[in-house]
Length: 222
Image (cartoon, rainbow, N blue to C red; front, side):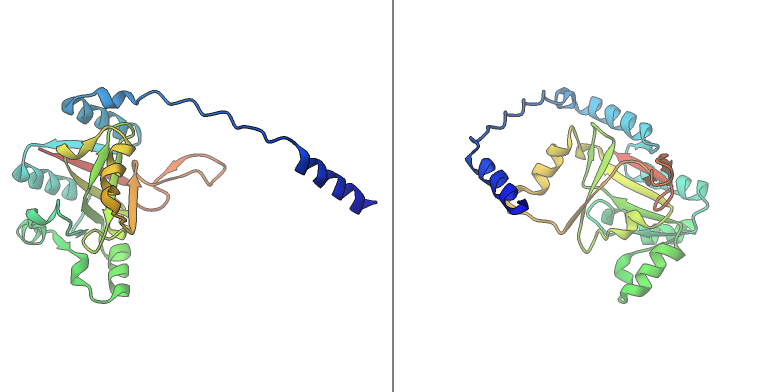
């Protein structure tokens, strides 16, 4: 009886006429696509602030290093881990740190992965990175990872300081991802960071800083 009922149901499903799925309506274009460069910066700052991050404008590299020192001293950072990506490399942070009395470490100094992991989790108070793009519509940083931009620098320390050239502020996620994945490029990892770390696992209540960076500073260069 059960078998007959099962066969009957399957037969009815097989004989049912195909149904067409209605096409999804096209989304209207994001309003950020119509913004000029200055408006994109302002929109990014507004959205980042809404997520608990802090954006600071700096005119050039000299001003950036002054502001970076202010942040590190304000947060009582005596040792930081800095990536060696294309944005940060020209700054010479290791030598600058020696003059400022702040130890700047880099992942390339570690030949042993366990030593590096211990350092980035337990021995530094801040991580400093560049960012490949910043998304105006959501205040999000986009980091493309490779040997010069390891993931843990932006994810493990309690303070994350990111440097973003203002020319790399784009309107939408798609604007960044189209460039990142252009011409068949396939990076192993891409991280999207929107404000300090957040969880809602405890009684579904959003809570900032439960794990990972509790503070996010973004220095907008240019």
